[in-house]
Image 1 (tube, rainbow, N blue to C red):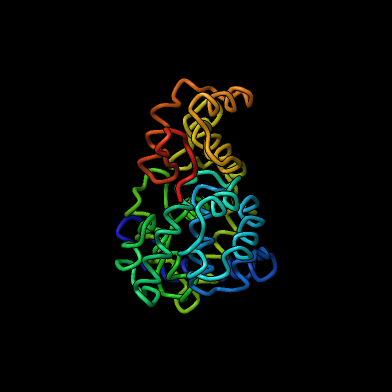
Image 2: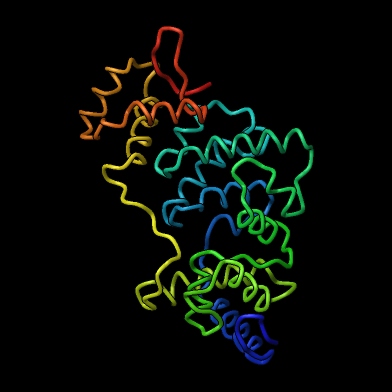
Length: 276
């Protein structure tokens, strides 16, 4: 077998697949979303895992499913309760998008089975669409996250200069067909536990920006404060932020963002609250 970008034989691919699966049979991580691969559970875990480390997701995933055990519960959830459960995961707009996606799914009456249909859901891009199909339905598709990219490079099938489409081509070649779910779990575990970023010195394609002092920190603080309040005036909100040593210089544009994203509402009296 030979990729358009890298030369390797079908024997190379078979040996690689055998090596990864042999290792995984003995070292697989026990993660809660692997115990139930129903589409709803997979959707929740995949959205939570976007830009968030596994160890932070595990307790939140379990708490989330206790509060919202099915798609109908999530679709009709109270926004304040939803954000309270989400608190600690960051990127709160994902919670709103997940609720929006749940509403879309309830309206559809069935769970999408193609990348194109899944990509129509709020907050679900091509990678997450592929991942949902892989982990919920064991579809013969390949997906490349940061861990898998590092494994492909460190194992000699790809290089750091490759574009996303080139990496996708390599991943398609290496896919263990018929066992896509297991194959991706194995690659992710191998990248997390063996071929780590520190052991390989392979840099990710994109890095998260600094959190402290950022608008991300300010956004998260505003949501956290409002989630624990009924309504607050602008001055009261700024007072809470200051007491938490959060820089407030961008509070006006950040509030405008949160209002536009329907995370926050302004009451008729000009006070702020979590959106209904």
